[in-house]
Image (cartoon, rainbow, N blue to C red; front, side, top):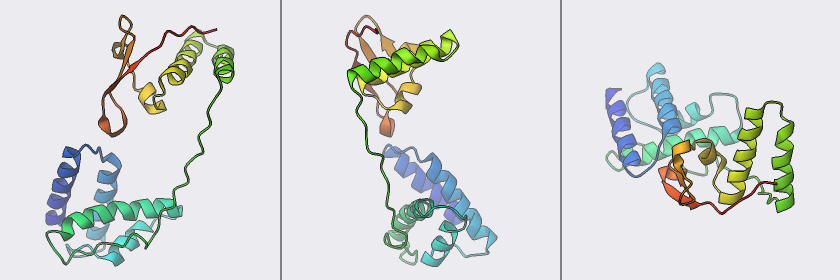
Length: 182
């Protein structure tokens, strides 16, 4: 199985060089290779083995589709070098993501949310959430980006917020307008 493990390391290195993080994919693909080892399968990925592994845990169809999609990407990579590697078709377990419908808050709703944070008990929690809501409202950054911020990411002299851990690992600047909380 060391050949597949080496190929997995190469695949992850190539994809990471293109800017993908792949923490979950690495974990899932390691589990898939462990499954192949445990079942005594040879070193060839087949549609049957990929489908068997993807649907093992009793879970949602979306989880099964995501697991199979992860194997599909790795199998496509391997198929270029070894035509015996079977690539599971996308329609085998179709993924139908259910995206949340965004809700845009009015200025009054944002101010009410910031004000209601003062009912949370401790001054530290109040200050943290009031700041978080305000930063989200005036910059438009994602919640994960806001949570990853550090004090050094804000330049008060220039009114610039540096988002170091953005989507796809992109670092970008956000100009902070002068904002006065009510």
